[in-house]
Image 1: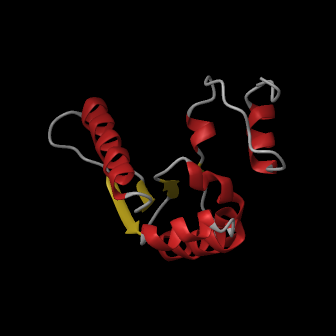
Image 2 (image 1 turned 30 degrees about the vertical axis):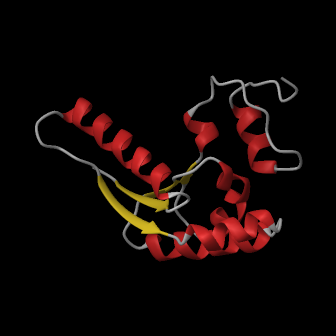
Length: 134
């Protein structure tokens, strides 16, 4: 079983939901008392929210990149436990050498519109054959 590096705390309520769903899925697939192998780094949401409200997305991305870097030694891949912060996923990917499971990769059948100018989203939409104008 691979180890998941979870970046959480944005908000803790969202993190709990990710953790619950991941473990329910592991139990469903493997049965018994199995649970996910994971490392959790919970950031202080106050700091993240300040970056968001001040449109300091680069600073937020660099912070999450550093968090991902700290998880990289023990994790096989990274999951960001919130939707909004996928906006800065490119900063996270630049900092590490393991994959980030992007929410758009996990939900390719959803009708979602990528944020303007975000190349990662464009690659995902192209890879999944989605029309970016929907």
